[in-house]
Image: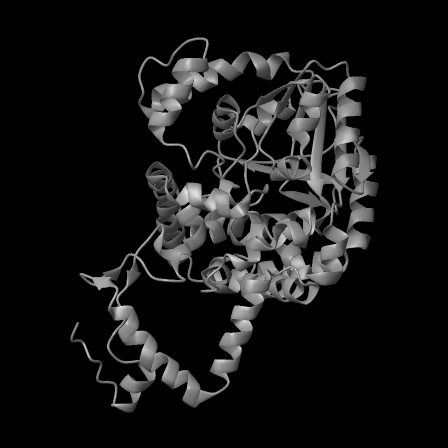
Amino acid sequence: MTAPAGNFHDRVEKALHDPQLKIAIERTTGNARRKRAAAVAAWPDFEAARAAAAAIKDHAIEHMAFYLEMFERNALASGALVHWARDADEACRIVVDLCKAAGAKTVTRSKSMLGEEIGLPHALAGAGLRRVETDLAEHIIQLAGETPSHIIWPAAHRTAEDVAKLFDQYHHEKPPAHDVVSMVGSARKELRADFFAAEVGISGANFLVAETGAICTITNEGNAELTTTPPRVHIVTAGIEKIVASTEHALQLTRLLVRSATGADLTQYTTFHCGPKRPGDRDGPEQFHIVLVDHGRTQMLAEMPDMLRCLRCGACLNHCVVYRAIGGHAYGGAYPGPMGSVLTPVFDGLERTRDLPTACTLNGQCKQVCPVDIPLPTLLRHWRARSWRAGYEPKISSAAVKAWAYVAARPALYRLAQAFALPAMRLFAREGWISSLPLASGWTASRDFPKPPRQTFLTTIKKGGKENRKP
């Protein structure tokens, strides 16, 4: 598995010059936006449900310690074993030790962004364990040796044509045709034997239900059930922010999560797993382990608790103009898009990742579509301010902002600057667009800049709103 190479600017540059990537991303995110919009329009009480969902999460976060202890108590009563991990290394060590104790050689895994966050695929490979990704999109990127580029559709950067080539190259039996049905059937056939050969199945959890000690998985392919049921050992890795008070709360959040992610009313598979197989059960794991992971979440509890509401639906990615232009790999972390630009500095440090909060237009669409109303633009501005105070911003950026602030604080000087800037910019325009502009190569290197109007917005207002439309 290859992590995105280079620094943020290099990755963005590469992505902006990849026309195939734009086609693949727009196919996925455009479809997701249309389906979400239809689902929201068909639910008159959506805004009320959204407010209720935010309140459910806020309640669980405010009383997190209480509900986590309740969850542990009930999970133990069901026969599960609960492990606590302070960070990514400890979480991976626990999982690897459990796999070794089970004598595992092959491990199946259903999609879990927490697993990507803590580097579990690398840890399993380092321990000599054969990892089989069972989610179809994860199967695709495992064949390609890549990391996920979207939290719901990990292979969003791959077109159907790409997938056909991968399956032809790596599947033991090539798909009989390259239509969707044939390729899905080929993946199912390829993965089938591994579902029953694996000694350990690893899943994430969409919710941890305190009142029962159960965990909830939500998928569309049924691979989570095949990952967690046949193996002798089921290991769950989950962030502690997944805690909710009750099954009712989990179901209320599921309604928002699924509509925001895929536009459907429910996913094909919503399963509550509670303890190992009991006497008389026809199937199920003999051992059921739950690894509860902190990895920066208690820091977020103090600094940005709103972010702990995140359901990992991906709606903010699908509506983000930056994500849609550069895709997920350019972000460099496990989580791309607006939510990733808030989370990655927590996990990887702000000094290393300060470019992410900066690469945002702050247009606010991410907040508008968030099913639990996370103020993502506010949180991004929080990181920008922290970066500025810590002195992480380049000196040239600092000088440019100070110069702009000096001019902007003096209206007469600001208007004078505009009076010179607009005509000067228009000199570079050809057929309504500027393809090259001094000091703006960062923009014009990959896209044109629109030719500015003859007069400023303020001048237009003063003239009674009559815009000078003469080109």
